[in-house]
Length: 327
Image (tube, rainbow, N blue to C red; front, side, top):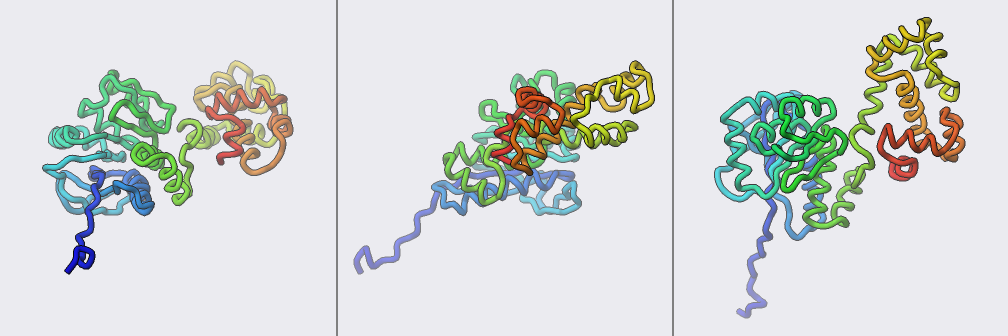
């Protein structure tokens, strides 16, 4: 029988080992989102596919923060890990206070090419001493705490993710998908990452930072305060000249009392709040209408395109073009 007639063994492709470390109270989306991105990349017939697994200190069921249990393998005791990912979740603070768990994490990192934290998973990396002297980010609500508890970290609350050498950290929850796409791009190039993003129906690169995406939440928390009626009036008539005097009159308070109480209850100044409301309206119009920029600026109270552009940069860190074309 000739060589061509023999059934040759199929060549086994090398794989990139991606390991998620799970724990009770983990955020399931911090695992599922990036894991799906790697799985989708495999469907693109990449030269070195990803081998994704989820492990924990003890094998078996792990109770996530969503009360959905996932099955984890025991932490591997040998072998090289290409990418180690520590997801976030409310249980991360119990994890970082567990000396045995942090020591096990340190052992894993010694045989890992790159180390990543999604959301508040940064606290576990910080407890292991891996972020000392580095730039890092976490969920916008936890940035101040991370900086306070680990002052040797340069916490930057703005980006969706930060790469500092072989360590990557990300902002809140869905930023794990942004991270995975960047890792895929790093491994296999931008065209592959773009195809994965398209299949997942997400942006390959979201413009701006996490402040942009948390801003609507901040506005909602503001309107829950006692100035809800005033903010609703501003949103209803954004082109009106909303001076402090006029707003104080609407609130039936003296200017001094109004300014003091408004800042105390909303965490921002009246002028800044007006700008935030107007910017939210601009964003909505840019994404849902074909109105010209000058028309949008006039309707939302900015008066000029240049003033509107500067305000959007201050509030969201993006341009009018990015908001209209990429959203």
